[in-house]
Length: 201
Image (spheres, rainbow, N blue to C red):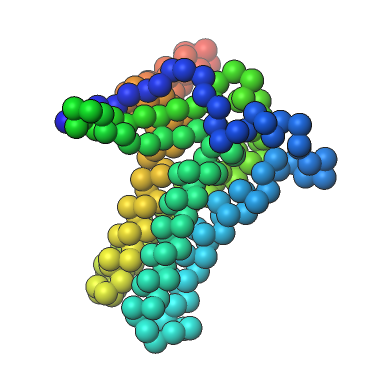
């Protein structure tokens, strides 16, 4: 049985508090290396997928390269860049009874001020755009009957989609249902439009 838990205690994420005095005055990025690798593995996997048939005739070599890049991306985003760039982390743990618990955490208090706007934009842009591209690749592979590439594209969708789902859950809160959040948002938008229409009359 899987339960979703949220840990409400304030946590130190990847020793981010220790780095508070080391901000570079030349750049708006607090963690330029993390920002680079957040984008590097994702973009390299996409370019490798798009250009692999041009560079190499070996399907197995291309497939292994792309899956390794996707795996490196998954690990890097889940374990490093999420903590450093936006102060979020998520994982699954199994307790002594064998029950699976999903834990979603976000940095609280003074730690939230340590994430920069530019890093946050880079993080969320990379996190959202790349899974969308893999979904597009999935449909193009399916409709062009390139069945041998289907496993690679599914790996891209699953690995990058899992990180997207985990970080969205961290952002909105571990106990908050994404469906209820979307319903509340749409309800507020409808109410705002109704109020603005009545004010115009």
